Image (cartoon, rainbow, N blue to C red; front, side, top):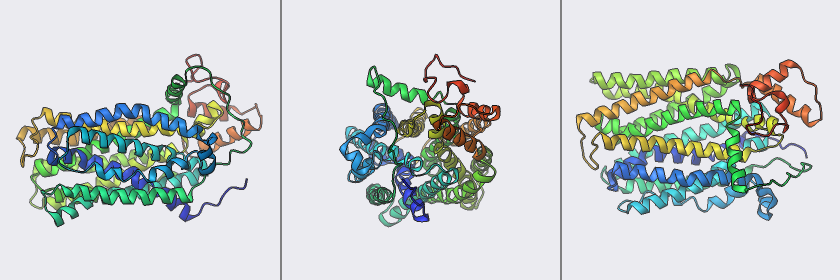
Length: 496
């Protein structure tokens, strides 16, 4: 089958669904804890419990969705609409549930159930979606552009998530809880349009001629979680997860506590917090554009470290502003936030750019494509990371004596807010900097990997020592154990 032509509109249509991916994370990460504790009467611990319970459910749901999407092509629906794309089409009609999360005055159980249900729908879209770039192309540069397109849309959604609440507050008043309901309704509509656009303009790899997978013995549930665990035995995937978690948890902690920092520690307003979060997203937008270019020249790992330096400088500036409290406070805040946002663009883009190549590295080990399984791990880790960040912030706020619905907080609570915002984010980013030094994936090593896979498919068995060493460093396995010859278990030898 002839490869389909990828046009600029293809990139735009693909990237649109990250309005859901980043938009939902941006809105919930920045505002949901604040909404629960300020307008719903929940304690910080009750709010944190919602995120904790949802992650337990997600530990089952996300891997299962990834596994099902890998095997959905054999069903009538999968053959008609695609094993990945079917999930997008079905989920479009469930996405309005996002607005239900933002209804004030309900019980703890209402908020728990609405959050869990949306979390499930989110996974049902994002896990299959994350495999589509690898389904649509195998070219290194095209995959980088797909990653760039989705992150640009994601940053636009984050910008909207930051500034829109402030605009609604200006219109409705700072004490009206319906601010967040309208926010949820607007984003629900955007999510539906974006996912439908991606579904209509995407496609999946032609699998004609691929041999059917042999039936697997043993308990299917144990096999499922065995597959998930096996992805962590891939060296580059482990490094990728370390970079991903360090950067994204740092951003999640920042988002979760930033509104508290502005409103309570600096004694300002929710409108200013909203405007500053919008400025962060604006900076991230340009940071993503810069990172797309740098990843193809400077390469991913050095670009990631440069992003950490920029973001760290902006966050450190916030500490100086808090201590000095200059008379023109707002302007200093906007400058620091813009610098942090520029660095955050790189932290947001690079892990998702790297993700598009994880299926290629896994294929040289297993001899098959497990993009859905890898996507299931990624989505679970992403949501678990955000929940861990928000839960931790909630627990620390409760420990510090945070008073729900209070106009001001104690000096001790404000000090803790500052420590979490500055110390927590910087510690995580330093960890990511260190982890990135072990990454060897770039356009040259990926070209070697692609060549080796093609030659293995053609039945070749002789390879140069240079090619072997490159692939071994990417996979973490001895070359003799690759291409399905060494099952992913303890009996197989690792190179490191």
